[in-house]
Image 1 (cartoon, each protein chain N blue to C red):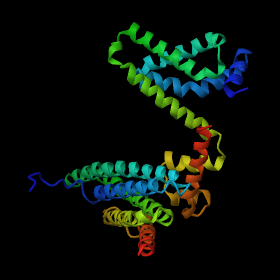
Image 2 (image 1 turned 180 degrees about the vertical axis):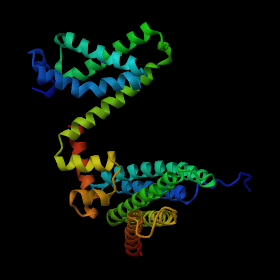
Image 3 (image 1 turned 30 degrees about the vertical axis):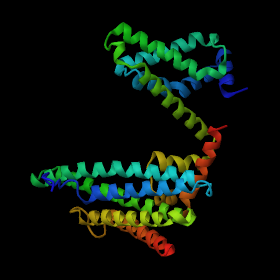
Image 4 (image 1 turned 90 degrees about the vertical axis):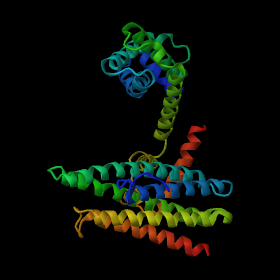
Length: 173
Length: 170
């Protein structure tokens, strides 16, 4: 067993970002494997790579911002509100980028070689899970009220991702 | 006549607008070589930048092949930066690896070529590629901003990238 203490700042936001980034890399791999039969595949590879890089950056930023928010919560000051606002913004961006990964995975699943279709469906499911986790973090933020547009935006991204994933998974059986 | 040939010819004919265009087109390129390639900072980078364009102005008539305008400007910039480093002794020339500088210039050349090719694409392609790759906007945001169904954005981006690639590969 590892003796390293858990790092509470690398929580669900960080994990969601990294998971969706891994899903995006999988989408890129599947599209790359289908380049011979699909003219749009190189463009999809470029988009998946861009989303993967974007999500890796967002995951790290989320960990940094969440750490700052935890410190601010422990020692309340006028800065607390600002830190909490930033802590809601990052999961929202992760939810939206994850939703895009799920949508791209669904497109790839429709067009890719049959041998790798299950990988595209798996990528859509992973991205949808990441979007749902990130949207939940927006909802859990202390500054976000039920009618907050940011929450509506995050929940819509999670819904879109879930739809992409379920459509893809059902088509693959 | 290529764009570079035409620009050089207009500059040599004394067209002030052409000089303004030349500075506008190459200013970021020159500044990036000074600051990223040779790591000149602040006033040093700004002075080197000015020196480069003074030399371009004074020596453009010696450029034998106007189509080689960009590599010629890159070479002038290298000389100016090395002169400044040697004269100022703020940083030993050995601290700046020649291979690193060349790699940086290669990257800048590539970025420059992509930007040029991008500017030749239709407006709608420039817009959608800029929004996705430079502004990190989501498919939904792009769709809403451009009045397009978000489900069509990914394929639109792919088609625009294919056109960009065609331009780059000539």
